[in-house]
Structure formats: C-alpha cells, structure tokens
Image (cartoon, rainbow, N blue to C red; front, side, top):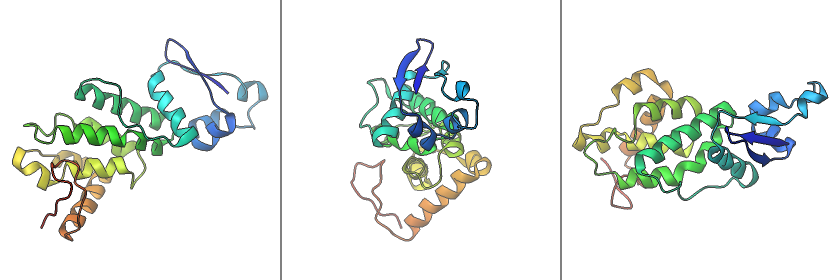
Length: 199
C-alpha cells in the first residue's frame, strides 16, 4: 500500500495486511468489504508529520525502539513526543508510543534537577498520553513515576488537577505509589542513582 504523508507528500510503502493488523484506522479504510477501488487506493496523511509516521512504520516492521529523537532542545523533543503520541491515537495504534520511551526517559533524567518539574512533563503531555496510550505501557509508567509526590516535593510540583480529571493518570500514579509503599526497588528514572527505595 502506498502512503503519502505531510504536505511534502513523503512516500511510504507498507504491506496492506500489516497496516490492517496494527492500525484500527487503516483497518477501517482498507476493509475488504469496501469497494475494491476504494480499499486499494493510495492513502494520504497530508496533515501529519512524515518523521512521526516513519517511527510508526519502524514499529510495524520491527517493533523498533529508538534511542534518541533528532537533536532538538529538550522542550522541542517533548513536543515531538506529544505529536507522535497524537498520531498513534489517530491511527489507533497507541502501543506504538513505546518507541519514544528511551528518548523521553533520557530527557526527563537530564532535567531531574530542574527548578520547574512541570516544564517538560506538562499537563498537555499527561492528558494526551493517558487518553491515547493503552494501560500498563512503559511510557505511562514513566510519566507516573516522574510525577510521584516523592519526586516533586523538593521542587513544588503539583499535578492535582490532572489526577482529578484524568482517571487513567490517577490509577497509574496510585499503582506506582503502591509499589513505592511496598518498598520495592524501583529503577527510578529521575535520580542520579540507579536504584532508589522510598519508605
């Protein structure tokens, strides 16, 4: 299947059966019950980012996990993560969001001592992630651990509004908090130490 992405119409060629298997969006558009000329027609995602779609193609082919996003500043990298998560939501392939985990973890760890803990883990990122990505995904676990009270107390961060509005965020935060209370060893992403135990 030929797919053209962004206003520049960057071309991707992906087997139709893989698109249908992984993506609910393409599953509906390429349904065999649709008239043949519709189901076999080239697909256009002209409002979307070609680099983001390229990551999805990597996921479809290899379940690829990238080590880093292109060399932007950290704020722009987080904006790129948000853009990518939105595209996974549009294409109904939210589990593909796991490909940004290594990059997001690196960004958050690098900014762990920031005076403003909400500068990168914004309300927008939390809401989009928890409304789009399936539960028990490593990206959601990372965001929940990054916003635990134990992490934010020294820097005054507060995500009370998100906890009240976003049930999924509240549930994952509680799960991570329980793990801390049970005195489990966590590979804590926002610390200079490899492991940290909270009591």
